[in-house]
Length: 356
Ligand code: ATP
Ligand code: MG
Image (cartoon, rainbow, N blue to C red):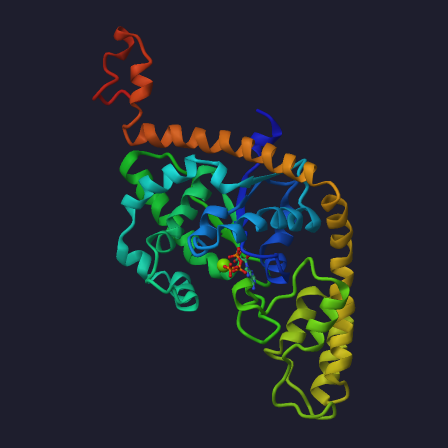
């Protein structure tokens, strides 16, 4: 057995609906970079899922596939060890989704708190597309197709992992032990707030600092950030709790002493928002600068990026197809296997319990 086969597997991904931001980084991407040597890691650019709420604008999804791939490579995913794939090019995922749909009730899908919140935000003009409502099922197909043990995600994705676990348990109980039961992996910052103070930094809310933002854009966005609304003057005692500027310091500033000191002075009213924000701009630009350099290198050589996607997708397709074979067999719909046998061999293949 090769070392790659012995390693536990990670599957995770992002919707190509816009540039990746600090929320993605601290919620999931950073862990992927840290774990990519220790685990056999698969990362999916979920374009099919992105189409569920962008079906009127496929060009947006198309453009963002390469943008997300560049974000990955910039953030430090190493294509030598991590498999980066494009969801739509792995057709086994669509077929698996179809089988899993039988194992989920409509009521269960409608109760999913993240989907509920997203439906509210999206304000679909002609009602909720079925494809959108069932995206947690297609996500279960993604996770199980790659036989993932671990799924590094932000907090909003916990209901999706729970849904996946339900499907896996149900499938294995009904049809025999076939699928791997996955676990979520939450980071220390599973829900980074937006620059506007809203609960979640999100592409759809327009409150992001992107990994691809220039140093100037980072400065502008930080300087406009929401802080403590009850504080009028720098000499007023301020609130650190729930203040996104300090939350970002906690998440990204490696100098813990500086953070502790700034918090203390803020609470006493001896430091202004501008100084706290100026430090944050430096911290964020220190984090993003190496990413900008790597991005520039890869952006000069898009042919290499396409080759990475093609090779990763091919590798992923083989893994997903193998799972699909096992799933068809468990579902007793592996007729082709019977048809391929000689007459004698096929005896006991059709309509029997011989599924060896
Ligand atoms: P969209 O608005 O299009 O859904 P998004 O910003 O929610 O975009 P996704 O592609 O849905 O991004 O999420 C990819 C991964 O990043 C998921 O694991 C998600 O939980 C995580 N993530 C997204 N935003 C945050 C955040 N603000 N804090 C922590 N994790 C996040
Ligand atoms: Mg999302």
